[in-house]
Image (cartoon, rainbow, N blue to C red; front, side, top):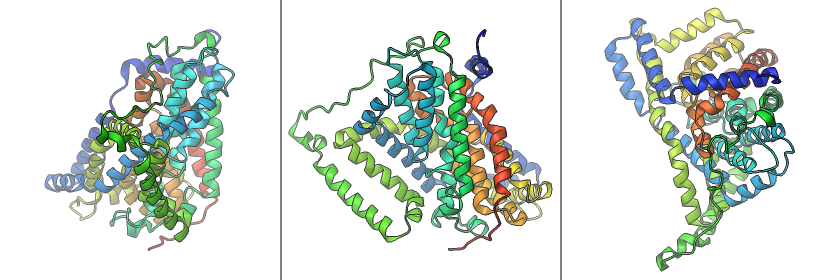
Length: 470
């Protein structure tokens, strides 16, 4: 490791360790059920009540599960469309050095995540592959892959695709048991707070800087070729001609134009008929916008359907794990103890007992980040945590919108080492999670203290407002 700076040396060491010891994300979700069920049992909840809550909660998040699946699919379709590929080819010309290439990947992936986290994963993966094909620079493929993941590990929950902010901004998405505690919280009180925007700027600058200095130099770089990654197989953007008369409409843009025109008409009614921030905060509207965009950019139904087919495997983890999160939430919030209270109520009281108004944001950030190692989900984990965290925020008079942002910022931290959301990216790259985690852990070591400090310091600048009911 002679000649390495401290960030590069640390990233290299962790990468070597991760290649031997990294587990699967589904195991984390199942372990969370075990931990919560045992905690409820030891707290005095009857086994019958635990089992009942598990079964009743299993299907409670089906609408939200489908919404999250559509976030992935619509983002994938948009990112793999011909115009997006052309943009990537143009961006490929910008870097001049190996480390500069990694920094560019980090920057553009972070910016893409503010619009759609799924889009950022696919966009980042395709950008990495395009840069890896350049012959004039010897870019480390692992460090570049980690940089392509930074939208999920640094900033995604601070942008428009924040599941928690979207859920809290929509009365139809908020669970009925949570609504009296939080009320409806618009984007203006969460992701568009000046404090939130400042935190976003700081994290972007820091993430790009760490990506640059932790990347191996040309002499020590491990390229895609070194890893046996075939970049020559990248698909060309071509559309075959129909072989049968019945296939003509699949290759013609006529139907796409019609559907996109209808979709644009509906979106115009939504955005001009109400506050644009309220319109875009609706998760269904958000997904519809990206789906129509994906259709338009794909142009032909055949290309659109091919992109959807490639995106579907990426949602497997969401489909099988989100119901488990619903069960966990029900055990926490519905299963009564002997005194009639729930485990979430007890946890809320515990947070109040150890916190003050000025320390709650930092303590909540640490707790939420740790829990995120076991429950790798933005919206699903928020539904589990929100009942007791927001109740504690009310009792301690902490700004409710900032409490959502505390969750958002802390939620991104465990993503840096949990493989759950890495699946879509590493699928595009042809890597394994262990190949990039050494570099994402390096980001985590820098991010964690910085994020917790900002959560505390910026939270002190905001005043409490009671829940706003619809």
